[in-house]
Figure 1: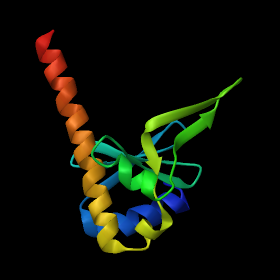
Figure 2 (figure 1 turned 90 degrees about the vertical axis):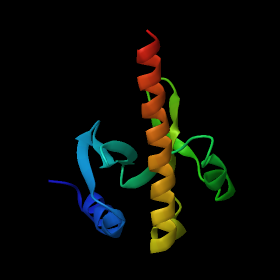
Figure 3 (figure 1 turned 135 degrees about the horizontal axis):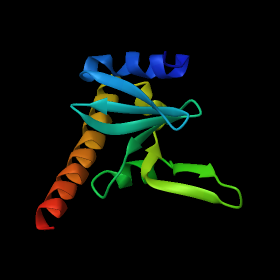
Figure 4 (figure 1 turned 90 degrees about the horizontal axis):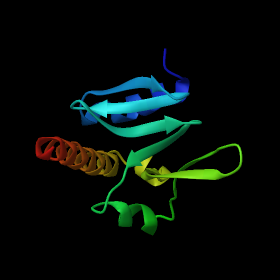
Length: 118
């Protein structure tokens, strides 16, 4: 069973396609059309970010997902915190989901091309 926060996020995303959650690393991975496009960790939502959408997050003052290791803080720069105003605006949320999925699709396509070259 998903956490209350995860259920809340899935409910917000329901108008934007079939989004599913899978447990991973103490949080959740969110999938749409077979691609992971977001993660939930510590009751915070992070979308997949690449060159095409990073400026949106920077302009909103958001930061990448990070976690503490024994001796240092580690940043996972491919996922950034989603601004609250995006969650509160259904149309904007849909656009940001689409952008995050596009980044995931691009990364998946790049992996396939790399395997084909090997």
